[in-house]
Length: 214
Image (cartoon, rainbow, N blue to C red; front, side, top):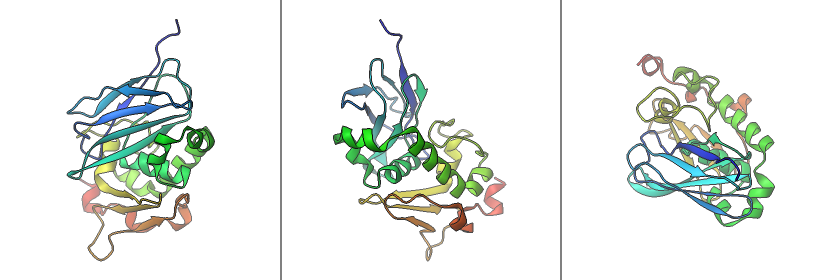
């Protein structure tokens, strides 16, 4: 028998995604149920014998309403893959459409989700969020697989400071929670399939100094 392989992570939006239901689908359309802790959002999927790439979905409470967030992996084997609004945005950019469409289309998963697409898109988002990553102690941290525990140092601090909205067509809006004002709620808007560019990174995606010192 092959050695057991698992994909584990945390479903979170800043706070843990409480009561989340997490599932994983592989390139052949096979699904795996991933038991999740109702309080912490941590989950684990048995992917033994499944074929990469994988799409993971967490459905649960986000801002007092039910929502589904997506995350992706292009590689097989035991690994950490978190599911957050940021991984949902990365998935939307990679496929250029609503990322939940991956759950019903394994051909889309096979054609769009590659190691190169993921690494390139993650780097683009990391560059765009460089100031926030620095201010929250996450410089160099992988936006998909980095340390994530609600209320602890790591990606949770970043998720607390950035608001991410994936539109129905796959477009993405990002704004800095600490720096946002009522007249400029969106500071970076991306068309479907368009990754952020460092040259156009808005300065207001940085924390004010008072917030950065907390």
